[in-house]
Length: 76
Image (cartoon, rainbow, N blue to C red):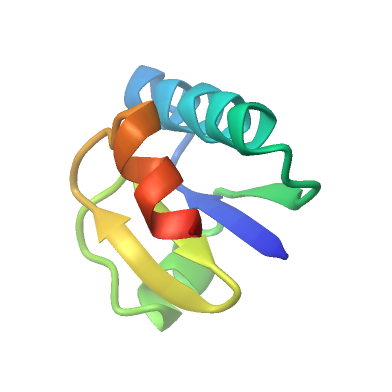
């Protein structure tokens, strides 16, 4: 599983990354978590509002900091 956190590195983006890692630990899922800060790559996903989370190439959430519980639901 490949998870990408899209954003400029703002505090919300960092919080989303932390929540994602917590969700992975709680679900015992081993996944690659990548931070994407390149605006060109972010736009390629059609995301205009960050932070965003992409799971295996599919945008799951954008424009808000998803909670640990929301992320767990996305990963199941």
